[in-house]
Amino acid sequence: MWIKPSAVYNNDGLAYIAKPSAYGPVMNHISNLLSGGVVMNSTVPGCTAYFNNSGWRHLVVTYNGTDVKFYVNGLLVQTHNKPGYIPASVSDYYIGDVLGFIRWKGKIDDLRFYSRALSATDVQKLYNL
Image 1 (spheres, rainbow, N blue to C red):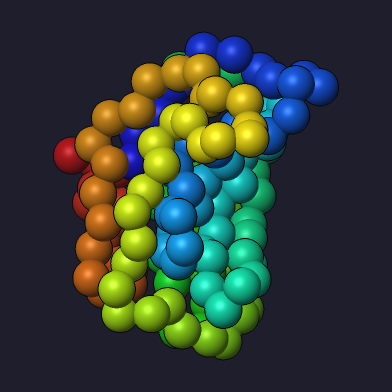
Image 2 (spheres, helix red, strand yellow):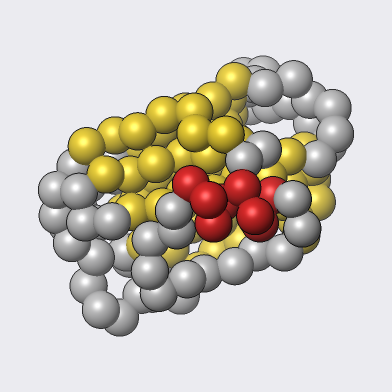
């Protein structure tokens, strides 16, 4: 997905950009920190990246059954090793607003879900579209 935050949250709390109701990829924003991960088996292995608050950025979370990878602007910023699985039925998603959390402030464009883990080359191609 592409995002453009319109606010840095300081001490406001956690804002979800995209969050599954049960299992699947998750992205959130708190202060000047972006976080991406995968909700599976009641755990959320996550990866983080710091950013300034200007401009659009491209975020990608991939999971291949072993590693969660978080990319920002086409570059791998962190890998988290967490073997496990995501149930075959991915749940409904909340985009920008999750009950009990502050609303995410910003713009979202080109949100995509794939049925396979993207490679670094795939991520780079998406970033360059």
